[in-house]
Image 1: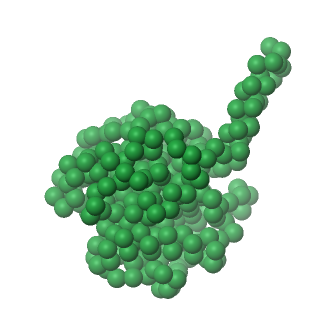
Image 2: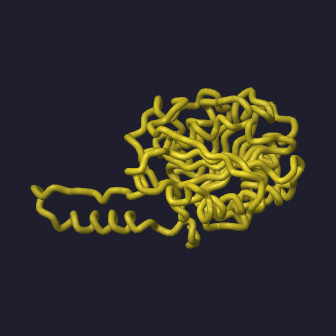
Image 3: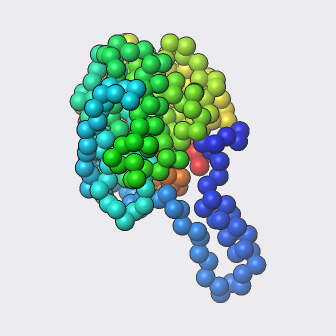
Length: 291
């Protein structure tokens, strides 16, 4: 994979590699201890835990007024203070949409050990490029000026969105390759070109979507460079606005993607490589192994 900031090896991975080398010279009776991942949060995952409506962390939320380059929104965060900082994600709604329309994502993802910033856009008809700019502004606000900035690891950030907001997330990834992950749900990006993408990218298509069709998204997915980690999930029987209702299919695939790339948590690879549960999924493509 091309070396760039978002995919540089974590210090704990280098330590783990050194541990493996050292084990070669240890006696057979010496205990072997792998270095712990400092970004890992929460207990060992199970199929039930990634599908649960509430994860292991209690959460709270705080409202953000309009300004700072975006239309305000709501920040959801784990209340635990003994876990260190958490990775974070900013999420944009789509054309004519507002955050309350997809707000179920906030507490559900935050309860798995993330700070989640659901934003409102400056205008309901903002373009994908404008939404990408606003997502990046929201991350800057979150890490530099928000009331929960001390809970966020500014080096572990991601973006997501629906429809034009999904296109905004992909646009943001193209412009800020230091991001750890990008997720586009039925994303509309006019160019359809992700050949410059260096951020691990998950694209959701909806099988019955006539606005942003699976064929369009398959073509866009295929433009992501081979060196960039990627996945494509087509949700069976779903229409363009499927994300408007709580979805276990989305949650149990989004959470592992975030855990793998924001937290470097290899415990979650089991859910995507291969996909452990194909219920509700009509197509799945990926660049496994992801980590």
